[in-house]
Structures are given as C-alpha cells and as structure tokens.
Amino acid sequence: MEVSHSVKERTIAENSLVILLQGLRGHVTTVDLRDESTATGRVTNVDAFMNVRLAEVTFTDRQGMVSHLDELFVTGRNVRYVHIPDEVDIRATIEQQLQAIHRVRYFGGRDKGRKEFPRAKHK
Amino acid sequence: GGAMSFLKRFPPPAEGVRHQQPDTEAVLAGRSLGAGTLYIAESRLSWLENSGVGFSLDYPTISLHAVSRDLSAYPWEHLYVMVNAKFEEEEAKEAPMAEGEEEEDSDDDVEPIAEFRFVPSDKSALEAMFSAMCECQALHPDPDDEDSDNDYEGDEYDVEARELEQGDIPSFYTYEEGLSHLTAEGQATLERLEGMLAQSVSSQYNMAGVRTEDSIREFEDGMEVDMAPVVAGQFEDAEVDH
Image (cartoon, chains in turn blue, orange):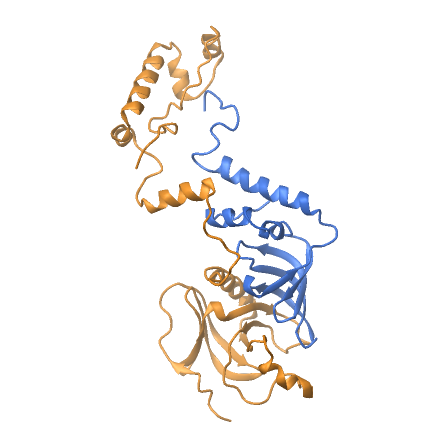
C-alpha cells in the first residue's frame, strides 16, 4: 500500500476524507468534474490535494461528447464528486490507509516507534 | 487569418524544466499555432514556436491534462490540456454548438475554457510529458481551498517541521559531536551505561550486535536491562532542547 513520502501530505490525508479516495487506487471509478464533465477510469493516484490521476479513461465532456483518454490528471480544485464503487468497503479502506500511514510514521522514521514493540537488545 | 495576439516573444525557461519536447505542434481550439518546443517547467508550462514566439500557462489555471490516443476523437496522439482562461481564438470551434449553447460564456458559474493540444512528433514521449505535468501540477496546490486546514497539530507534522526550520540539525551525531550536544542528564546517562558495559564480560558481543549463546548465558542472572542503543550519539530519549 503506497503512502505519500511527504510528511505534510500524510498529515493532511490522515485528517480528511481524502484518505478514503487514496484507498481507491486500482479501482475503477467515476469522477464528476466541476464543469459537469465526467471521467470514468482506474484510479492510479490521489494526492492530499485531491488531484486525481486516472488510467484508461472514458471522458464525457460537458456537451456529452465521449472520448477515450489513456491517462487523465484532474486537479483537486476541479473535482466535484468521486463516486465510491460499490465493491469498496469504506470503513475498511479508511482503516487500511491509516495503518499504512502509521507504518510509515512509526517504523519507517528514524526517531519514532522506539516504544512500539519490544526492542531487540542487540541490533 | 489573424495572428494570435496572446503570442509573445520570450526566452525559454532555464530553471526547473522537468521535461522539454521539441518538434511539438500546439493547437488551440482546433487551430494550429505551428511547430515548436514544449517546456514543462515547475513554474509554468510554456510553448515556443520555432520562430521564438509562444505562450505560457500557469498551473493554477490548468484544470486537467490527459494523454489522448483515441484517433477517432482527434487524428493525432497528443497531450490535452484544459485551461480555465480565455484565449483569443477564431470563431471556429471544434464541435458545432447548438443554438442554446452560445450562452455558455455568460452562464452564472461557467468559467471560460480553452482547450490546448500538444502534438509531439515523437508519440512515445507522451508518457513522460504527462508525468512531468502531473509532478509540476502537484507543486501548485489550490490556495483557495477552504477545506485545507494547514493548522495541524499532529505530532509528526510538528516535530519534523520544527526540525526542518532549524536548518542544519544533522540526523546523526558522530561521537565527538554528540558528546558536545549532551545535556548534563544525557552525560550522566552515558557514563552510567558505559560503566555497565565495562562490567559486562561479553561486552564485545554487545558491541558487535550479535547475540551469541555466551552472551545469553551471561544475562541469565535475571537482570534484564533495556539498554539504550550502544551506537554513540543516538540518545533518542534525551530531551535535547534547541
């Protein structure tokens, strides 16, 4: 499970529902844009600013014209809705993402987690 | 046709250029602006025709970008960029619009839109162009985002941000540097631990970090000591006040 390398982004994600969107990586979903166009594709990445990257996209513009895009990046500002696919368990997804962040924070960092688990006496 | 008056002469960006793609045609709303070089730089996206005139787009104005290989939608594979701004263009639009649609510009919330297409002669470069744009776009998060509360009190954020502000605090101290940074308490701890090490017969095993049968037996007197790491300098428990 991938988590941002940025401390700031991890903190932002942990404190907002963007963390749910980040858990959608790999799922096919529909994103409604501010201008009422929609994009349906597989989520490649969602960052803390809700920038969404999709692959294999069916894009319907605001006039209803449909086209296919290999990859699409929508800025967070222009995202109106992100549809959560039916097969996604929302609570479990959020929990998994939180665990991933905590793993990075406590076991990946240099000065955290010293009390988290029995330390081996000899490194 | 008339010249596009938003085209200006300017030098190509010199800094923070994540990707540069020569021999790239720029198309605005279906009209070709010519062949030139696309510069995907951290500060802005620029395109310069071979004659030296071109234009720049600021990332905050870019709503989205995409790689299009759907030849039924547009006959050449390209990088599509949608911009929240108005650029001078000819009347001709790509798709004919129904009568009622002409009011779209004066709709209450509908913002202006300009559609650019960058068609590289080297189609295989599209992935790199797309990724470079994603990276640069991420450098310009929306400042107007009301939801983003940057006033986080999370542990992690505070600690690391404070440390970053301090500038040159190293992550590791060499033995000599570390000694000079110890508080009196830290110094006392160090002396106590070094004393304990000196008493331990199998200290050589401790230092090497290898727990042998011998060293296990040594400690079986029941005295389980949770020692701080033996490597000098990593006194994580010390409250170091900066």
